[in-house]
Length: 562
Image (cartoon, rainbow, N blue to C red; front, top):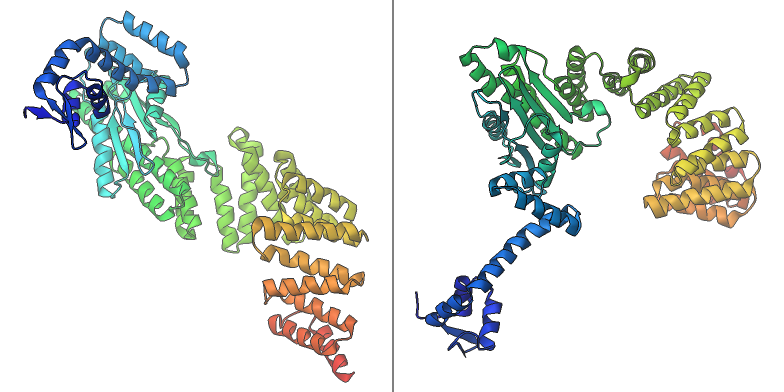
């Protein structure tokens, strides 16, 4: 060690910061310290003397540093000063620091597991509680090893598996949840092993808002009793190092697959969940908790990838394992719609409704059932059964009053039946539920126009246009209300306003053929034959199969004659 030190070197010995050492030097509290070229030069002997004279100060600072490490963790729990006092009181009662540390970890104040970063998935495993006299096969380490081996095989570098310091019994769910959340973990695993049974608890700490609860596995308890009691010592060891780790690794990978699903990485999610299923298929000949849900999730993912045959295959696997899964029928219905097999679509929608209302009513989700009535209503309407569609839309509203689509479709049915006041009522309720849906304003505007309420119609068309440009920031939803408002202006002979609307629509989308037909009619009213003919011809070029073809050709011929 050199005979002279700078402030940084002295700070390490004195357990102070370099700034604190410099302050002591300026105050003359460190003997013979002097400043040369902007740096403090401190004799080593002076540092030793200061340490001898200020041992109490050092110990006080060390206590402060320990408190500063602990206090933010306590504050993070939001318990304030009263909690700190209570914790210190409890710690003082305990005879040994080891017991206090364990208790603080159970409370989530201390953590031996580094928190997860935003880029990684974290699984925390607490050592299992082992009853006295039972062989400890270190099941927690076997589970960790199994998951890590699989993650290497599938290049899942974002996955980290950690062992907590605290051993937890299977009934200590609250402590497990606290420990897991303290580390921002995705999953925590814990349990107990007795001579009679093995209990493994698996908790997904951050379940995702996926389309259905049937796609989510959150809280599972794996219990083995009879099998454990019948096994020989050798088979028992094999069971605990193979069977159970396989089940937990399956659940862990399934959870990660769900995370990837929620992030839109469908192909990667499929790969991970297929690997998860492969793990339990290799080791187990019995049904595994969550396995049917995993097959169902694969069916949904394949459907989203438009791989309909693979989707149907996995949906069949899910149904074979668990006949109570209802989402199978909804996904099949969507697949048959994509394949234009509308009869099969209706059959699956009917099957879902029958199961939810008769066979398994307690397992159904009201919003999904309401959506199913809505979708069946759409199909009935397309097939020409407006009366059946109306019944389904009303049932959909009963189950999910907040969904604006049901009011919109009912309004359309009533408009087609020329029940315009009832249609306006439905559109208005829909607007209350979804005030930024420009379709509702467009159709309510149409109904007002049919009733001769032109000012109200113009107001609704104007709102629909503003929503498109200002909220959607997309001109396409504004094209129809622009055209409709322009036609209404034409009808009430406000020609300049009509022309402006048609021009904006065409400038926004040059291939929007209705605006050319409308503007041609305007030019006819204005007596501008040349521009009218030009717009009629553009309309026919863009829409050669139009049912208005004869009218357009006749109009062109008459204009040419004159």
